[in-house]
Length: 283
Length: 260
Image (cartoon, rainbow over all chains, first blue to last red; front, side):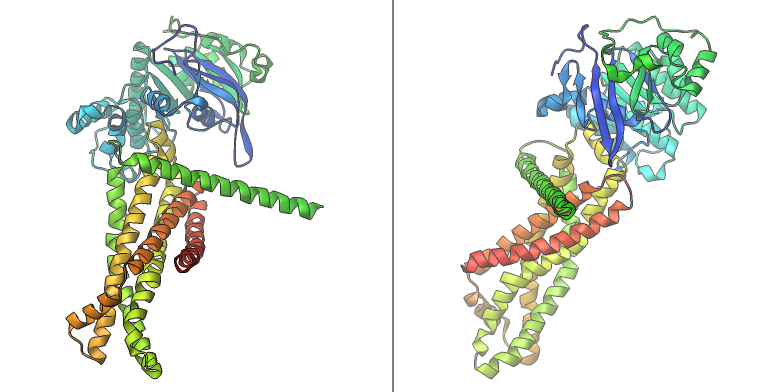
């Protein structure tokens, strides 16, 4: 696996004709996408369209039935133990439902990536980092609580803190503002903005058009397990309204973005135009 | 033809399940070899497992062992004199408790307590995506979740078997005191002169094999849970059922090897 942070010829994560199923049901049906290094990509789609599975496959948490997932040009499925460890150290994942470890307290939940990847920091430095990260997200409950003692929104904040505490290069976020009140959502937006400023690669799947409007350098639309559109925000908003009426129509109605990011990817390669399965032309 | 095809499909499913299970077992052994060689965060899980499986089961194991030891003595004391074989009492005690009932009943207790607990706990973690969260932060679930449970159950199984033997023989001593008061030195001396290294080795070999079976089957069934919470109790039931069957089969095989 390449160790260098970026290569202008390669996307950070690339999915090639990925198919995935669960319990006999096909969830991803030949999905293709390339998430550029240093940019924020948002994939939207209706409930049950395969967004979460797409993200988990991209993050190497769910093995695809067929097709391949590449991280900086190297296939995840071929990673050895060291490559896998390096990949995990460079990535963070926010789960849709938090997925906190029920038998561990909040401090352990949040500091686990540090204990795995930055063990040299020591317990007190880890606890301090945990407090800082959670504080920035507005979490002000105790660190000794178990996840079951927190609300769904608080669990989500802890999950987000766990995903970013080790300062990963690449962050996967599954509906990061779900279950959050408006203030908490604003703090999460601020965190994502900060990640973008630092040129981290962020991949978000969400129902919220707000996330796409604010942050999408690349916008994808998933429907029935296929990425029916994937490109720059303007391209996708301009062409995909037929594919997903609600969310895209709302984005389109908002007009041009006031703060439309003029950003160049650190290594963009558009998804294979020849990948018939993406059906980008269908919309 | 349809029946033959169905049988073929079922056989293929069973064979692939067996191969998957063997692959799982191989991975557990491989990661166990690595467990002590590296700094990691799994030691807490190991200590908790030994506390739950070993320490917390001491009381039930001791009570059961005393009762079984007493029962064997009562039966032996009433039957053996009829054949003029009273001196065999100590041999029977050693063979039955140390070689057979100690490891077997301890394995049943551990299966009922820890096997179900392990399978349902891991199954719950699967359903709640906690396993995926471990992978996401870079922890191998086999290394972090299975290996500590594997080592914890095997160590607890060995220790509890020794405890069972001690308490079983103690139970017998209590009955001896009630029926035919004997100085403890004399009682222990007679027992020790009967006990051989082969008896100890036999019991501990069985304990080791049973510990491996319970831990591997329970963790495997826990991970076999897919998505629904309704699968969790099923995983517990399967862990107990499969462990009991495999323990009995292994008991027969190990006994055959030892007496062959």
